Length: 152
Ligand code: DQA
Image (cartoon, rainbow, N blue to C red; front, side):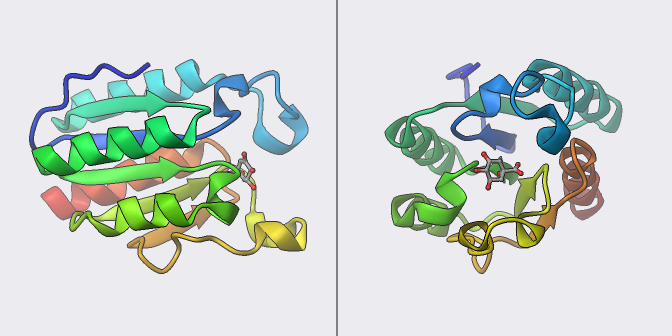
């Protein structure tokens, strides 16, 4: 899913570990749509809004950091990120995200604040522009609409 073709002014849609399993993974929590379906809808909406998206998913923390570094070098317009479980654990992810000066929207399909206590902490919440949690796949779309409103 990493296109490697990062151009300036892009919005980066980053998904972390296990999110490649959406559709099959605990659908009662995360919904029935696959990540490809979610990204497909997002792409259509971005095209209609005149925005360019680059999609990246990885199960590997280091790959996500490398991707963020590459995005940083190009000057991103915005980032939509669902870091999966790395949300709750990764100082390295936080440090990489801290380099970015663009708007950052943190998205979670489930409402992390209604779940186990260990999910209530996000390592990136205070460096993100905002957090959308519990709106299922609509959260990604809401994030895109927000970034579009900023761009407009
Ligand atoms: C998640 C919530 C995280 O706690 C979990 O580890 C995930 C998905 C969500 O989208 O609801 O992998 O980020």
